[in-house]
Image 1 (spheres, chains in turn cyan, brown):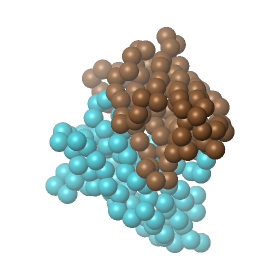
Image 2 (spheres, helix red, strand yellow; image 1 turned 180 degrees about the vertical axis):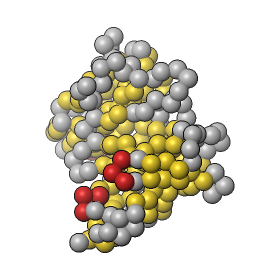
Image 3 (cartoon, one colour; image 1 turned 30 degrees about the vertical axis):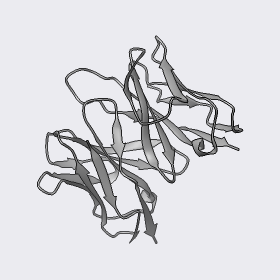
Length: 112
Length: 115
């Protein structure tokens, strides 16, 4: 069975600071891994995805994530936070089927 | 290309009623998946439809059902509504092409409130 654990339900950073959102996964098969962002009253937008190509994945809005098989991790980072990054972020895992398994989400706050 | 659309965006029902939510996928996408989002349980997979057939199902009671039409549009139905069914229901579509991973694109959701 596949599962995802996001460490920290709330993360607060100052504008310009490093953003680090943690995600660990469990999967018995090579996983596909994703980070989605959700702004208030909106659906989910894909930030980036890992599908067994390069382990360092670059996404939109300056975000990137590194797949580390030995640590079963897929942490999301951004070198410099912007006020517009404040949102909820979800890590998800999937096999080839049309089913995503999500973590509980991490709410990112950005202080001026 | 137009994105995934969901109607209605907001819905208020009372306990015991039933509700039908609609999802129109991106043109050319043949797979539609449904998710329930609540503060307590987070995002949970309901079911996936592909070529008018249910391909995957999550752990939800039989009150939750869905269908897909020949134009790939999908509906989900919840019968005998309970207070706990209050949630944001998200629909996602993907091309579901064989041999590669297919990204899911999400709609804005339908906010269901059960009173």
